[in-house]
Image (cartoon, rainbow, N blue to C red):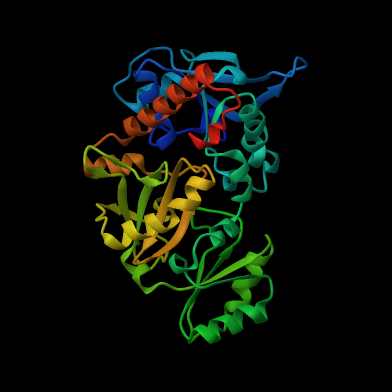
Length: 348
């Protein structure tokens, strides 16, 4: 299998990232495994998509630190590969990382990924669906029963009215963005500073106002979904909990949160079943559900992280399960190419 992982920038990837774990797992299984950055694509005059890509020099590695160091360093293989000849292109960039400084990079994977799909490459997650998910509006397309009550607006009066009608605390955050940046809790009995918070967020666009989930004080659970099902390998769910640290309302790990083992109960599995049809319909192969109680806080479809955290607590290498699934997709692709014409690969 020839597989490339599309990231924001190859040289800023870290060994703890889930993308690195999957890329190393693919290489260790004998696959041709590449990393491609947002600025590395080209469509040549012969109308073939090519990319400057990097791969690790050896065929087997024991840890991601060594793997990535050699891939990024002088020992790494650097080649201009044909994207059209790949079996799989995994889109694993975080658009929020490039917002404001490299806006052109936010959609590079989507733009070139759409062309690669037409050339027969398996592109995951589906680039057409990712284009719809460039901001938190995509979350509103999922069933209402699993979402907090939400208002999306730029009008401060509407936000104040929304808070008053709910009768309890709300959370406001930017429509575009991730990682817990620009997230504020607005207490129902103290709206004095809400205008300031709104102005801070409104500079970058629309504002999402959501009901505050009391259960969030106990943290949230990141549950991975693959092919529309909770990712389970060797009897263990790919999941972990993120706990708040101190008074910070954010549980994101890079916002100061702490990690803990997850318990996947019936509420979490019910949420997974409710969102499953749309994830499958949209071609969302690997996503992360952020669950609080019986509600979803967010669905990460671009670059869900935490496979390493799930492995830490469950003692299972979930990256292998992902590569297993990709190998099956490639085998199905080759089978249908041999036996059928005009097959819709999105159904695989």
